[in-house]
Amino acid sequence: MAGHSKWANIKHRKGRQDAARGKLFGKLAKAIEVAARDGGGNTDFNPTLATAVEKAKAASMPNDNIERAIKRGTGEVEGAVYEEMYYEGYGPGGVALYVQVLTDNRNRAASDVRSTFTRHNGNLGEPGSVGYLFSQKGLILAKGEEDDVMLLALDAGADDVRDAGDGVFEVVTEASEMRGVREALDQGGAEVESADVTQLPATTVPVEEKEARSLLRLIDALEDLDDVQSVFSNYDIPDSVMENVLAEA
Image (cartoon, rainbow, N blue to C red; front, side):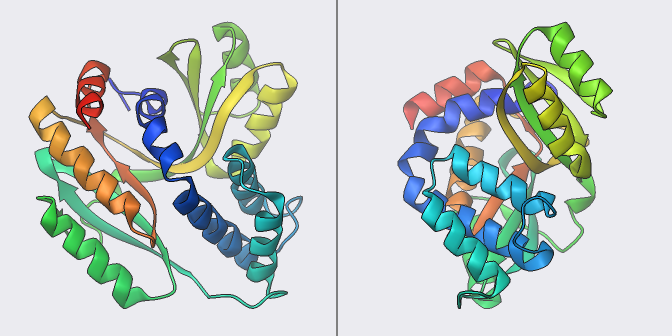
């Protein structure tokens, strides 16, 4: 995370993500279905589902779509059965890529991910080749006074609070503690920009501008695949370089 914040990445790539909203809704629905299947359809007793629903609402996904996804997950409405898998590999500059997939067709997902790595100068690795570099964590982006955010977050059980610039702070939690920390921030008057369970890297890899262009093209291509839910990486691209690269896109 050093040098290049999650907040900066969100700001710079938001325009592209908004343009792909229809595809985003499909991916959010898959996450809701899997969460409901694994933990039940009641958000009060299923924090993973609660987080998935909150994320869908933040993206302006219609409530009817959310309810249908929950019902498909609990079996009240017939639907596909998705399984979660991770693919691991390297992109330009030696950056580790940890690709989360939710799919109803394992062969299709494997073929699409493999060919995307190959087309964009990446290398698909063996299971375990990069997964050990990442840890599942809760990541909350919150605005507010630094002392207030830090006190609220740490008192609620957060692991760390980092200044991401522009008055935004990255609050890192254990995945199981994220919802409680978010509620504490909300109740304490902080403005929560987003809250996700994610995979954070233990170390980062500096990336120069030329490699950054190729790397972001690979990540974009992977994220465009219907079966890919998220792409986690350990790149460290300076904000100025990220702005230059995306301005050319």
